[in-house]
Length: 429
Ligand code: PMP
Image (cartoon, rainbow, N blue to C red; front, side):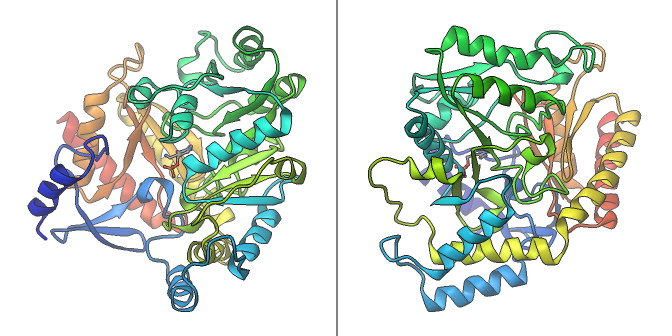
């Protein structure tokens, strides 16, 4: 099919709510390693990785060969017949997750992983109310849309009761108009105030992304989650770390983002990069939480042997290619380069993130911090024309999201930053 035929069929046969980047959508055709080609044969350096999913590079040979072998051996059995692939993955996850997390419930997406996490937290605690954070993104189901706290993603949803949202630890736009560290991380206290005023006074869980993804890579100060942990335990809640974007080495040095805040969650949810692009998700919990699940449950494709071997192979690649270290080292180098860009272009109001999860908040004026969504689109378009794919997000659609495959080196960073620099100078010209 030609590009035009694909776009016409997309209009005719796909729900219009499914979003695409760019005024002129890019039709993806094939990809290898750090590059993706469009249907017209143009090659792009991929610094978004299918929304932080292609962690070890497109079509990594080890992941691909494991998938091929498994497809030829056993493609599906459902969970009524356990497989070696499923239990071996669960064992590996227990090894790499922090604290006492040990048991897995496999799903096909991050949305389902979050649904299951909230459900099991309600069962384990006997409480109903859930605390989340403003600017969160949690998925596309009714419950996940209710946890999500950005109006554009909630509009279409019928919002569930029992979810409250506390102020966001968004230092660049502090909701309390304070400045870190003099603020004493006062925003954390709002979690307690929100529990006292908007819930029954006891909570099932607090759910948060260590670094908010779709919200625009908002990165809380280092004290934040420890303070919140103490509060939520006081009100009987479990700590759910939504690691759909931050999991599997993305933030460097640690397997999961929350480890940077030295908090041991009761539940971790993950998806995206877990299997480098195969549809997968998981709710991971401590034995007491997992064992508290009441009634039966089934997910036909959860723990599917093909995605399970893809996930295990992905984890092995992260280990073999020493990506925890690579992300830390290359991430630091990338950050320096981005800060140098910020010094050159006032459009870049803030640089934030960890490891190879770096965001640029674009503003019309660094003093007023007025969001610059049009310029963000222009920047995306210019980068595309210059052969670089990047992502965007944020409540005002003004945050550039950078999340390349984790096995890039300094050379790919230099290449990407040169293309960004060229794009910015073309915009200002
Ligand atoms: N949680 C977070 C933090 C996410 O970023 C996403 C997806 N962008 C989800 C949950 C939902 O995952 P999925 O799209 O796989 O359902």
